[in-house]
Image (cartoon, rainbow, N blue to C red; front, side, top):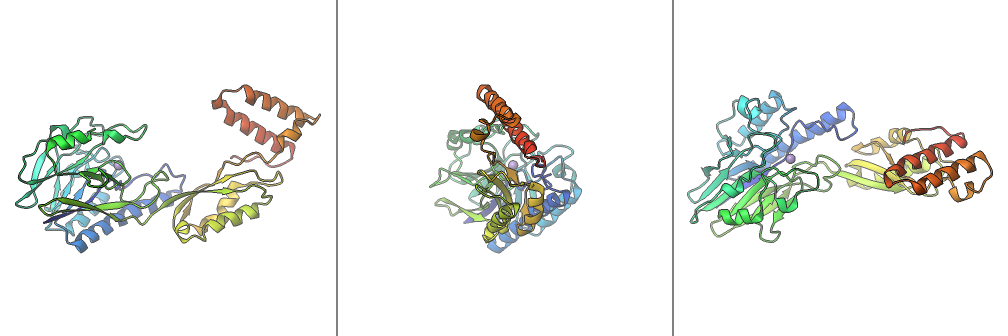
Length: 376
Ligand SMILES: [Mn+2]
């Protein structure tokens, strides 16, 4: 029996520029990624698996320096003499100035350095085949070039896109199809690239993505996993194990009828009564139609609520205008004329222009009401 612990897409040293965070927060997120690697090695030791495999995107090439390289090397050395097998991906390709190329790695770390398949025998009856990206945009179908002989258990390790499910706008790195896996004769493929857990086919999987070990932004909600693969000669089982410590959560708060910032502050704080939400990296979006007296100061709201959460992202205002437009446009006042004009423009405008006109209406009515104008 051979047991393998597999993870991918840790993205060490990620900038987290997508979060509107202070530098100190981004540094915390990066420290959380390092902590995940420590937990993964701890788990591999605790489970006493035969090998630890990495499906690429272990770090981000543009940002990762020798400090990170030394950290990775020290963590993997804890697993010695058992092997750590590493297939570089599009974010950590095997290129001359990469950490993989430049640093001295512990003898138990094996990096697949080429795009031709290299076999590593993990037991008398099991071979692991690996290949690594040699650049940030490899478009070759590597899995189509692999053909293994029956009579042994054959497992592939590679960073590649299952093109039956490329998310919109994401380029396909090393694209492959399910048919490529079937044709190759592989018993299983351990993959990296997609950031959510995917076992395919779901019930008796033949290839699997563990997903990112820690979620990296609000599009990666929920729990995240490593995979425990067990090959016993009869077949292969693949069991996801939760590994994340961080959770991203996006919530909406309906502020319809609220007329004070204090009421909104309380509504946001109430979210934190849920323990999971309090421990989450939160994004709150305000919706609904508040009263027109409300002075919505998003920055002040953030300041008075953020300490209830592990981290609270700047609050997003998606509320409807608190002004009664039907009534105002009947007025024979400048304000009435302003609303009539903008309503007419909105009716004739292409959809792309609507947000601008909506903002013009919102800020204009606030100005007429003598209220402060703030960004939203
Ligand atoms: Mn990735």
